[in-house]
Length: 362
Image (cartoon, rainbow, N blue to C red; front, side, top):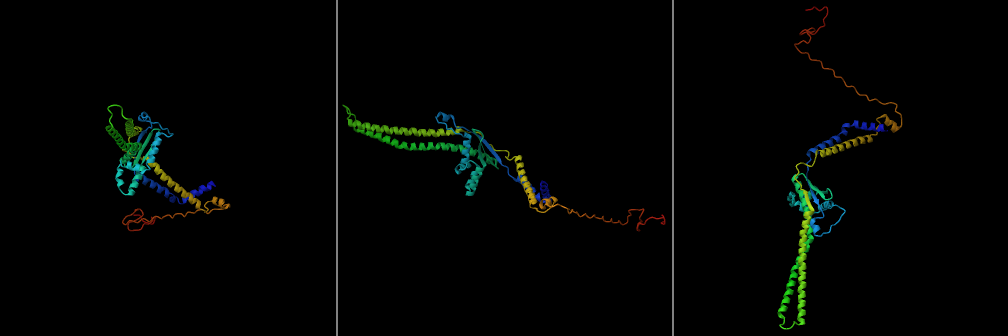
């Protein structure tokens, strides 16, 4: 059976061998055209060191948060999630030459946002190290996008740390003015009462006046305490904002800044692999055509076909007779006028005669 299968496959191939080679030749031609016409991409990458515990956070008494994920994994996941937001991508594009496209129509803006999102990437390279970069056909733009990615992420961390501090500072700053007015009003009320009811020259102040003065003094003290508390909390919120910026600057350190790439990222090996993939696809198509032709052909071409298909013995086979080629007779040579090819057998102007004993010799 295996012999019959091999014979059918070989017969199917050699019957239309040039037709079956067409997919392989076409895919090889496509591979060559792709290799010579494809544009090269340039890769600009850098590294960033991430740490969760800094000296400032330790001195300020911040409690450490424990997680089963490393700082590099947390940071890379945050970058990938932020790349799905339009606000983050727009902030990053503002630092590149792609900003000129953002003033065009909505289709161009959407294409620019997708181009930036597909071009940049970030991946952990250890517990505290992150490798980030960007790929583009323009080497300068690739460097700009890589720098914009990490700078925008660091600024986003500063803004997120500032947000609570800014809200708290604004809240207490709004309370300081009314608290100051209440304190001034309580003090003025106390002054006016003391002016109307001065201390007697002899004896002590009446009990009713002393109780009223104590009440006013208590109101002054309460207003003063509220104002002092609001001032302290407003100052604490301002210090927290400064501390958040400093902690972010210490937590994220760019070790290797992205540079303008001088050589394309595509190597000869990758081009050869891509060309081999095209050639392999062509070979698979050719093989599929050969196998399909062998399976669809139901005719009897070998004695084994009759034996396996009809279960009958083969008595004789019609031989293949090839018609012999006709031999071409050489064309007679033209006789040249005025010349003799054999002086011994021909005389000029007369036909050649065979020599005999009756023929007199000259």
